[in-house]
Image: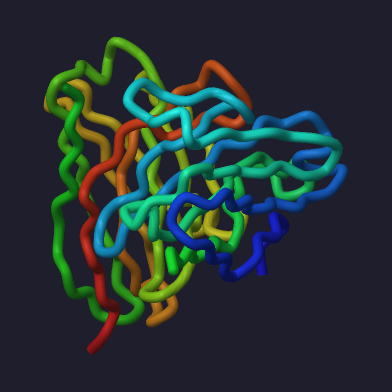
Length: 111
Length: 121
């Protein structure tokens, strides 16, 4: 069980907006450590989606956005498309565990 | 274009040592950045194993630290993972990745395709 909690699954219809939460504690997100997000399409390696809470790497559509507040972070996907169907993971650092940690992952289904 | 490629045995016997190498192309390891290993058991989530800087300094997941060694060979532009005393619980897809350390924690911006390592007799 990860110290970063994500919902196991979320779903939405094409064109809709969905959010994926990443809930931590005072030893990780709440301590000020950055949160990064990755997208993993079926059978492929993870791909960096958002880094340092809100920043998109070059080539990532602006439909994807990140935010962070207190002990939680969120990934929002607007204008949902079929190709967004994937697993999404958050990553941060935990001072109690002295290392990088990933959330358990969230499976996004596009209805 | 930075590319990473994992290589090594796909099958390891219990109690033996898992050894993987990541070959980097399109970027010289000695130029900087951290380089990391992440694994994913079948059907499960991601687990950070550890990172190494081009100078050789390392950081490891405390839960694996007693069994893990990550090393770098700048002359071959490669870095490697050794995981000792493996059990079936170490069966996973192992990814190598470049870790961008401008923030805390470093984020992984380039990934290898992954290699499935099965621990079985």
